[in-house]
Length: 263
Length: 105
Image 1 (cartoon, rainbow over the protein chains, first blue to last red):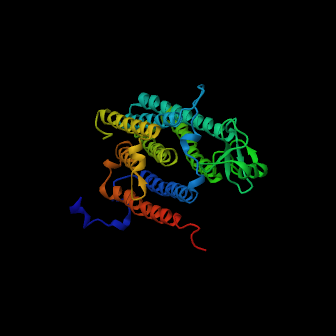
Image 2: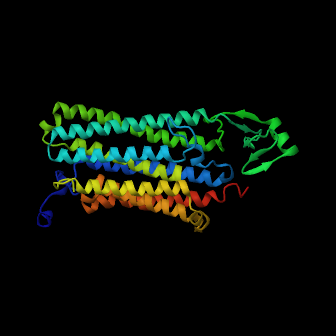
Image 3: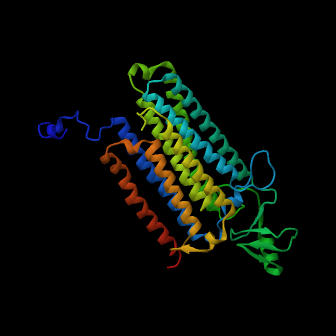
């Protein structure tokens, strides 16, 4: 390699300094820029959370439901979603692995499992969005200034606002000017500051859209694998490139999980 | 390595990710007081642990699942270096500014 460098004309093309195909290289650069986009979103989330720290909801008090079970189970559902996505990343990497060995049957098997994992994840996200939008039975009081308060359990005169219990005239005037709200949307949020809901919809929605496009692309290459397109082409690099994208989606979720639900 | 024969490494990384996530979830549910009440540079010890575990997970996903570890050094750097420069810069600016937000004017 070193010996031929001097006499080779590098401007004529056909040399591959990074020893990766054009498609794979561009996928890497796309993912790098996409990672910067997600860092900007999570950074902006951190900024607003810092600014509105007193009225910012705690994520595990918001997302504490689990399908078919009553009661409060903080973190369980989102942890399950994380495991599903990690598992689908493993099945993807196995599909790539058997692609290198030109083992069509195993690629079909592991790719199929990856698609199923992606669909389960999307379904879980839809469930979580539904519950967040729907809200609790109790709802909350939104004051004229937009701040959120809850009744102290069993009382209609005392309220909790920003972690402090208010009673007497202060509470009465707040209640008189407040509206009862249920659930969360882009305008108000019964759990706390409305920006929390906006960021939730925007960040998990943008990630969910990545998962959705990932599933669509996976289905396309799944059909191609079954039809033997890559067998004829002599390599399964397309599976590898889509695999890169899929792992990236998992990687983003790892960060969203930490910075949205844990921290 | 994807090209080598076995899938052992893939499953090892799976278990690493599984265990790290489980640790995060358990800490997230129980939130030990020792970790939430002490902080270094304004961030609680618990959050430091979460961030470090997340970076570990990211390292394993990128290096093993995405096979970046098997690419040429120059390619590895051209992907990783912009992240290591731009992301901390962005976070530093945003989070420092956030503490002054509304303080002036």
